[in-house]
Length: 211
Image (cartoon, rainbow, N blue to C red; front, side, top):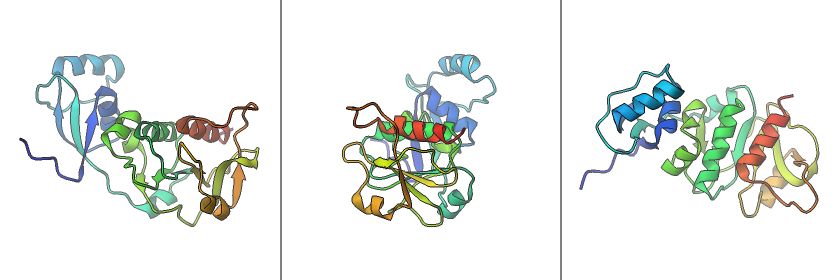
């Protein structure tokens, strides 16, 4: 049985995740896949990419070094910071990171046990963890206004430089975080609809604030 990869490496599965990892400067250590198939996809979807050498395999799988995460540097970047409180589903977590990268957020922070660099989260994000700082913290950091996205909040756009806190898929934000928040903002929804998918909620708030 082969030895497991070093703990500072993350697994990237599929061409689209590899494409974004390369596009945003990931330090690729190893790639496996069907070279002819990958070259065809790159020619059609990302002709600017310089593909690394790869070992033959049926599936596209790569390993890259996990970027160092510096919270102070993340908070110094312009744009909103997304805080996900104890997300449970790795695919949802990845999709929220994908939205945050597309909307040019400053960073994505998560609490709880779900690793935002897990292979399933990387697949859900299409590899866009490499496009902005992504890391785990115990709680939202200080230094920026903290906005809780909550059904009982007021209906307005979120401040552009705030930390925007979103709750987990089952229970939403904790009472402790809502009590700590500087303000609460709600996403307008039709009566009888109680919630949105996590990534959809992140998208709605981020793009409403870009106007």
